[in-house]
Structures are given as C-alpha cells and as structure tokens.
Length: 158
Image (cartoon, rainbow, N blue to C red; front, side):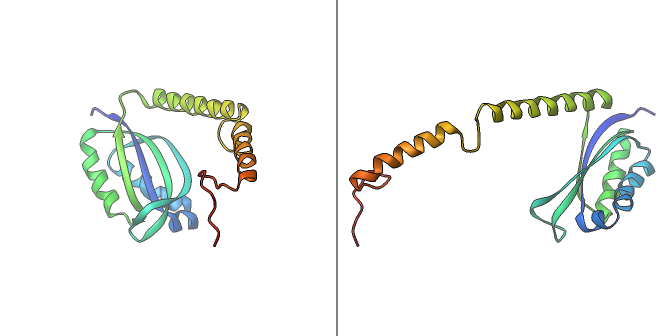
C-alpha cells in the first residue's frame, strides 16, 4: 500500500498533558497507529495561551508529529482525533519531500533564524538601542527650555 509523509500539529488539553504527558500523547500516537500510520518523529512543544477559547480551554500544549500513512487513512484519523477529548485541535499537512529532509531543512531554518537574532542583538537592533535613546534624550533637551510639549504647542495652564 502506498504511503505519504505528513506533518501534524496537535493542540492538547493542557491539564491532561501536565498531569500525564505519556498518556495524553500516547492517545494521539495510538490513533495514528490504529489507522496504519508509522510515526517517524515526535516532539513536545511548549504550553501556550490560545488566541480564543477551544473546548473550554484557554491554554494548550503543542505536539508535533511526523508520520507516514496511506492517504486513505486520513479520514479515519481525523474522525477519531475529533472524538478525542484530549485533542483540542489538529492539522495534518502532506509533505512534498521525505520527512528526514523536511526535518533537516527545518533545523537549518531554525539555526539561520537564531543566528540572525544573535547578529541583530549584537548590532543594537531591537529593544532600546543607543541610537534611539540618544534621539529621545535630544528631544527632551529641546522641550525643557521653551515650555512646549512634545507636539510643539505651548502647554496650557489650568
């Protein structure tokens, strides 16, 4: 039977994940394997606040799974995940390249972004850079003597 590679992100019930991670993630793994999926790699991400409430939850633990499965099995996987109380949301994407290559490209991209972030931090970008502080101090000095506010109008007395 022909299989395809997939990347899936699961938003798991945070309380269940904190209480027993192995059991909560195991439910997802069991559903995938029940439908003929072969799990290649799995990764627990962090707990995050949700943009809106899902199934009464404001926070979720993210769980990333790479797996190979027959394309016809996705409907059954989707139905079973929808019935699982510990899975708040899920999304599966078909990969164009093999999982190993996709994971390698993702790791390289993460490293490149981390390097860019380090380079920007070293160059004074972001936060409260010296150039921005210097300009702000200069504006304050200009405002001190003439009684004008930051918009150039005379301050009104009350």
